Length: 327
Ligand SMILES: [Mg+2]
Image (cartoon, rainbow, N blue to C red):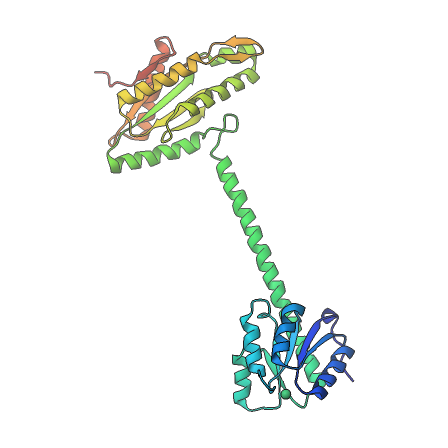
């Protein structure tokens, strides 16, 4: 009696290759009865052609055939990308070790000896179908894992980006700028170049919020952020430092260059027409500058810029002040 095939191998297609009609007939009948779809080929060339377009799940391949023998046929199948993954089981009357070895070397997964024992043949087919399915399943799972990994990586990168951006103004936030300042400090220690830290603050911002509401305050913050961003050089950085305070990092700059630059930005902010619900708003900013050199830490630099800013506020706002060591 022929054993029942497992449900999972239902409708599997098997290509049988043999030059001997009686063998083909026996295999065709037995495999059909076991529920397989069967394709037949009587030589190597025809086997390679059929395997290429019919994509059988398994190939039963006779070794001794006129012309192209089974080994050569198998090597050809293994060289083609679209047939290389189809398991090949050799059928051979030769049971010497050397021939079995040649079969494995040619890329076969198994062999059975003639005369064919149908029970053994079906059992081996089943094993290799299961193995093939397991391999395909693994490949699919691997691919899904890779996709999931990529998605995780993307979300992580997005989270990292979000953690460095101020959501209202879309400028870098304090955390991002703090890291940049440290990097710039390290760079300047190596290169000897100085850089400027500019802290700027919107004048009378509390009055804007009190008189027109926080929506208006937000619009002003966004406008100022846009103007700051538009006025810096490509190598400089701007961040929302907190509340209505912004910080500019100007690379490779001396104090007069920084002052000139800040003055230009100050003028751009002051000359911009701001409107809220058809009312014109007068917006100005005060700027405090400190130069950061190799021997001065970031913390001190920020403190000095803050002091300069405070002086500017004391002296009437809407101005640029460079920190000077007072005698
Ligand atoms: Mg033969």
